[in-house]
Structure formats: structure tokens, C-alpha cells
Length: 121
Image (cartoon, rainbow, N blue to C red; front, side, top):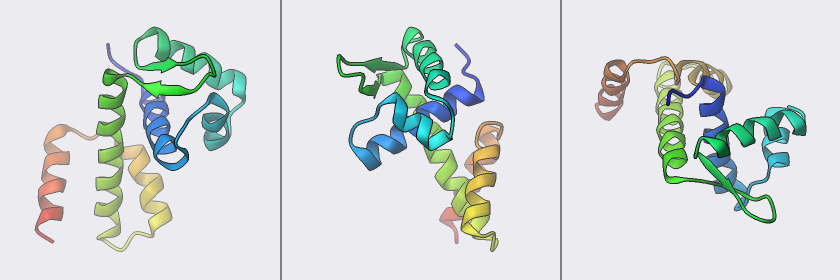
């Protein structure tokens, strides 16, 4: 199943929030994105139905194996692209924002070359 950019962003955010907070609920995601809780609840339902997340009795969200795979891939791209842009003197804030835009559309070949470039710095 092909994921939309927004679903990839949600999975990446769940991973980042889990690292920062330890446990993640829909309200944490809503706060991070600045969206309403009902909007996030709909998105989480779709991710759960497609096997990317699980929710326990207390509504804590965890990534399934497939969800974690997607989240780590997107997060790795985000970190690598941020570092790449910063290496050219782009401010951290702008590099973060631009990396978020690029991470979903960049080809594997280009991403691999960027990683190689960064290794040689």
C-alpha cells in the first residue's frame, strides 16, 4: 500500500514524540501539528486500520513493525537532508522546513548520493 505524504508525516511524528515523551496519544500529535483532535483521530483510525499503528486501552499509540519501518525511513531522510542543507549554510530552521518538503519526493538514487556526499565532508 502506498502511503500519502501526510500519513508518512504522522508516522514520523509518532516516532519523534515517542523518543521525546516516552508515550504518545492523539492529543500530542494534534498539538505538534496544530490540528484539531478530531482530525488527528480520523487519521489515526486510518493508520490503525492499515496496520501501521496500534492503540492500547489507554489510547496510547505505538508503531507496528511496518509503521516503524516507514517512520524510521522518513525520519532518517529528514535528518540527513537537514544536515545536507545546513552544510551549505542554510539556517537550522529553514533546513528543517525544507527537509520536510523534500523527504517524501526525493529519489532513492539522489538520497544515496547525498548520504555519500555527507560521509566525505
